[in-house]
Each structure stands twice: as C-alpha cells, then as structure tokens.
Length: 172
Image (cartoon, rainbow, N blue to C red; front, side, top):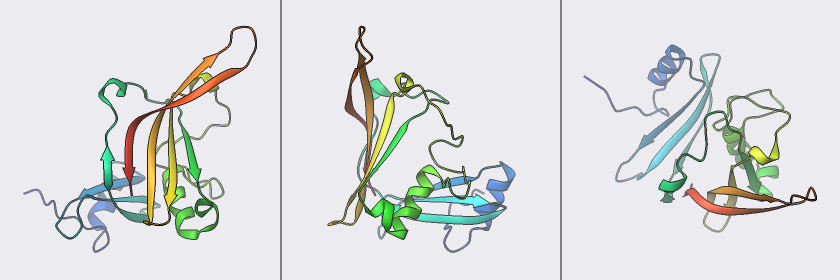
C-alpha cells in the first residue's frame, strides 16, 4: 500500500531515506488541504540530514505557456534576478534565496535551478530568466518567468534585449 501521508516537519525519515536511495540532494513535496491549500515544501539534504526546508503557499499560479515549453533545454543556463533589499539584508529572505540558487560562500551547489555552477557564459545562449521580488505589503515572494529576446546589431557589438513574460508565474 502506498502511503501518501508525508509531512516533512513531523517526520522526515521517509524523505531522507528516499533521497539517500536515489542520491537526491533536494526535494519538493506538494500538498493540498482545506487548512493549507496549494502548498509546497522545498528542502535540501546534506550528509544524510535535512539542511533546511521551507513551506510555501502557492497563489496566482500561471503555468508556462504551451508554445514556450521547449524553450529551456537540459543543461541550458538561465538568469535569476532577486529584486528587493530583503534578499540582501533579511536573514529569512537570504535563506530562501539560497535554497533557489545555492550558497556560493559555503560551496553548496545543491540549488533548485542549476546544480552545476559556471564561471563563464555566452550571453546569446541565455534564453530564460526568472525574477523574484518581494511584496512586503502582502508578505509574498513573486516569481515571474521571462523569455530573453536579444537582437544583435550586425555592424556593431550592441544588442537590444527585451523580456517577454512566458511563465511560470507564481506568488509564494
């Protein structure tokens, strides 16, 4: 019988066991209940122990548009922008930022979006970006997905770059 009742905050043994078995360093668990609708828990495992985990309530979810589903290929790099002083100075938001993009100071490359860090990139290969901003009035983190459109001029090395919202878009 499949036991679907997993609450990582009460008992994380099943999650740790599964992550060790399949050599996962990160997990995401989705749940839905009347008291806590549309929730996800994102966590990281390090040395067989839970390093950190955060619970988010999802609001205003818009999936990636159908005609852009093949935009991001495996191994392709993307940009992540964090707007707001909270991501730089508030310890809670710094920790949330680290779970999305890793912590370069601790050499933790267990981040959600790019498990392999790189020092150099070719700008013309960037096709997708994510913007994270803080809505301090409603206490939400807004995530928006954008397609990067770059028009390079032939004669000079200038380029015009624009962004088109393609999703996914969600408020945490």
